Image 1 (cartoon, rainbow, N blue to C red):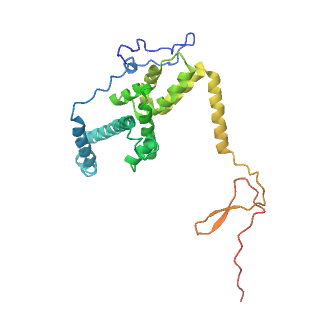
Image 2: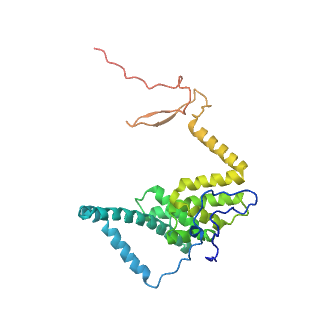
Image 3: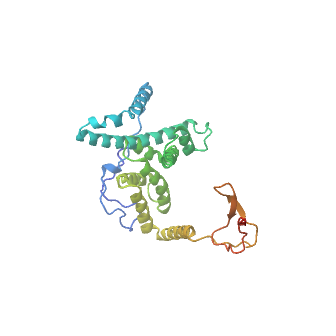
Length: 278
């Protein structure tokens, strides 16, 4: 389906829209925009051996804290670098494993409502943000249209956070650029993985602002309306003398729960305890 012959022969390229100028002002490495290699199936029996290595590596995590004082300064730096690299690659493998579970029907046959829910079931105790990200990327990578993203994750040229942004932003940008190639756009986004997800979102803003400024203005207006709705206090239009809804208190009693901005002058007050005289 893909061929390595489809590479960028220029350091900067327009997205197929004549007369519009260039989007990317900084040169991009040509090799970073080449299509990744196909995922080659491993030899028979490799899976069982990798599972043994995985169990041994997971078990070794408990021994590392007590052995760090034995390491040299250079070794400590190597441990930090290797561990963080392993974390990123492990998240890639987790997303690809989720994609494979979807293709096999494992997720459908489980009690989970979707890929993120299935990841939450099999990886209890993991940060929910990571669980949702891995599940979402795994779900999207199961779609053949996003095959290039799965290949980039497999070879380690992209991270799961960058893939999550690319899978969300590229379809939105392609709708504004009918002449753009979907795979080429994915490669452009994923080649900037080292700049972080925020830079990828800013790239979408630049592209849409140059080729579809009207859409950008509508998106900004929608965002401002959402932000205003979060900041502005709710308005209470209900009757003031209606019976208030009561909520639980920490001491076991109930108290009125009134919407923000309501007039509470006529709400019933909690009776004060009578003082005993004498």
